[in-house]
Length: 237
Image (cartoon, rainbow, N blue to C red; front, side, top):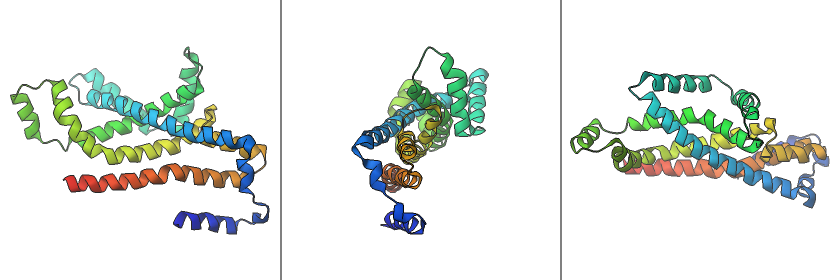
């Protein structure tokens, strides 16, 4: 309701609303563009989430390693990402590294860039979640002769997942919004596809309103889901 009123208010304040025609964005000629961009954005975001969780866990293991080399690599990479704007990081990864590799896909180059950028944030999630594991549990696992694999597989990871689900969904929301920057390297995600229709028909305002609506269609359910899991986790504790 609130978002509908917000969109209506924006429309009422728009001086050229008598010429406003959102239906032109949904003609048969452009409908497939919008559907493709919508679902490609979701696909990019899911792959990025999975990849960044895996790499983030590796970074966490590196940061907690007793070997200095692994700690330095993990810390240097994390500091580099935290000090870089996402758009700059995407451009550097794609144009200075990815294009010189034997790959041609802009899509997967963009996914790699997003994944690498999100990995240190996932590392921080693992670090925060690990603090919830009681030292007594670690000592008990050592006494009973658990290997590192068994510790993580049967004791640590199930507890981490319980704690990490809400912030993971929050990070997925950030990934979805960040995926719009893949437009700068020509990935046909949602922002790119709407921009094409927008400029092909001189529908600047209609295009941005449509972007606003379609991104909210993806992110608002995730925000609600985050709040739901936060309440669930609180009840588990």
